[in-house]
Image (cartoon, rainbow, N blue to C red):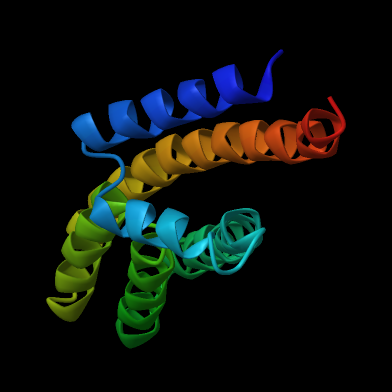
Length: 149
């Protein structure tokens, strides 16, 4: 597939994610910085996926405890909010705010329900970022070929 066509598909996909409220303007800001720092988007997405997966796992462990450590859950929700925000994952960030509020209120049922929402939104963001990462890798692999054409 032509690199230019794939780049346009990537732009359209990102635009669609913004229209759905999955990503916000921060993703575009990061994408613009890539002109100065090639590979930035791929590097940040890779880190976000690694740290986000770890955050979800740690929250899962903490919320399975009989006696929930609410300050720890609030802290983990805050960290996951930051991870999501770093790429413009606004729905993940909003869900984390709700979880943090439930944890601060020491409301176990609300924490569990809000964590389900966090997981759902994170999985949507994760799938979207993986798709962007795949497209970025293909575009970058095609770049040397286009320079020699």
